Each structure stands twice: as structure tokens, then as C-alpha cells.
Length: 335
Image 1 (cartoon, one colour):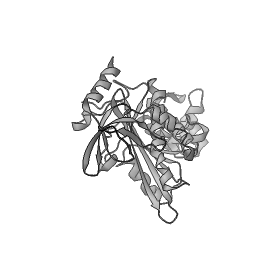
Image 2: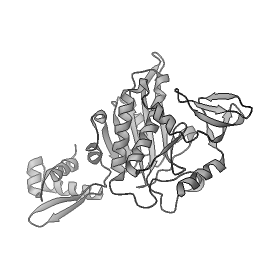
Image 3: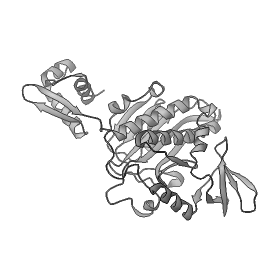
Image 4: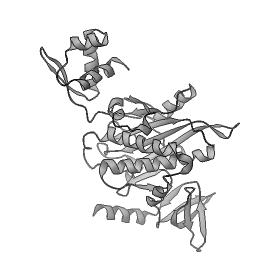
């Protein structure tokens, strides 16, 4: 814990102003160190007043995306989380993979205010502007087979959807297999990257990355992203939304992860399936095919009825919703 975190704890515990001299003595540092810590906290978004001859007082912190703000909202099942909030990274997944290779422990969480090289599926980039979203990755060291570990992404999708419910009061849906939709638009992408241990058919580690758009960037989403992307809030997000969302995701996910082989989340995953009943196109080898989604099975595979009436189980690949179905969904959500 650095000086800023220690000063923040003292301010949080105090019922009134705390002098810089008192905090310096309490922490065994200089008053200049306390002053620099307060300056750092203010730059991070904490509202701290300074009263002559009285000291510093913490006025507001609810909207600050900080490790302490998130940690206070964690439930026992998520106590393993060791949260590190950074201003800017290339990608939270990239940072955690590097830490994993160095022996980082399970439960390490990296959250960034901004990503310069955010990752999506199939080598795509994930647009990650400053202040508009929650960009978070979790390091896991699963003790089950690599095949079973595929359920990590499915569990995370349900965790994110339920956390969005908590923050917005409205229901989020899941587009198979790893996108979360809200009001007919994609608000979250999930990417799990893993290092496989071929000797025991398990994993050295898995890094679970999640990016959630809380608000639209100034000027809107760029390029082709604008056709699909959306945000949880039309204007400014309510105070405290980002730390609340981060904590809710971690609480939900770790509850599922600890019971992962039982897949306690699958019933809810199926109930939130955005694609059920929709006409889709999908790739099978080099060929594009069409079908109507009947639902999702226990293995999180897509059940599709083909034009000839036959049924197919679709376990991996890229699925696209036919444009008229998506437009209808958006119209329904806007009324």
C-alpha cells in the first residue's frame, strides 16, 4: 500500500478534518509526502477539502474508480481479488498475461481507465476510450481440465449481464457466445486467453478480459463500431456506477467460478439468449449458412434449425444476426 492509499484510509476513517502533521506522524512520513499523496488523490478524482488550521477532509469518493472503492463493495466469495487500477495500459489482458508468466497469483485484477490496444475476439481491436467504460481483466489458475475451462467465458457473460441489471435496473441479454447486449446494442465484449499445460490437459493460467461501455464517447463510436456498439447510459453515468459495476461483476463471477464444474449459471445463460428465435448466418468451414436459433444447450452450444428443417448443434465460430431482426429489437427497446 503506497502513501496515497494510506492517507486515503485515514481520511475515510476520520469523522472530521485531519491535519497533515497528524497523518505524517501516524504514517511515519514527512508532511510533504502527505501533501503529495493528497494531490495524487485529487488528481484521481477524490474530492478533498483543505481547511486552514484544521486539515484535510474527504468530501466525496463515490465516483472514483479506485481499488479501495471497489474492494469495499466485494462480497466474501470475491475476497481473493487483488485489484490494481491503472490510468492507461496497452491491454489489461496483455498486462495480466505478463504477470501470469512471472508467477502472478490467481485473483489478480487489472483495471484501466483507458486501453491503447484493447483486444477483441478473432484478432479484432476493442475500442477503449478514456473515462467511458470499464476495462478489466482477471487472472485465473483453474484446477480443472482445459475443456471445462471453456465455461469461464460463459460464466463471465452471465456475471456481466447480472451486474448490468444491478447498475441500470434493466435486463441485459447475451449474444452467443461472449457479447452482452443492452437495448439491442453491444455494450460488452469478453475475451478469455489461456496458456495450456499439455502434460496434464489443464491450464497454466487463464486471463479473463471484459470491456463494458458505460457512456458513449464524445462524438459517438467510430467507424463500423457505431453500427453495433452502445452504452449503458445515454448521458452521464450516475455517480459511483463504474466501481459498483466492477464490484458486481467480480462478486457474480467468482461465485460462479468457485462452482464452475456444476455450471450453476447455465439456466440463466439460456434465459438471456439474445439469439433464440432469431434468423442468423454462420460460417461452417468456408461456407456461409443460414438458420433459426432454437436455443442453447447445457454445453453452451447453439441449437439451430436449418432451412430444410434439420437441426444442427453449433459449438464455435462467428454468428451474425440478420439486420432486420436487430433493427426490430432496437425498436422494441426504444418504445
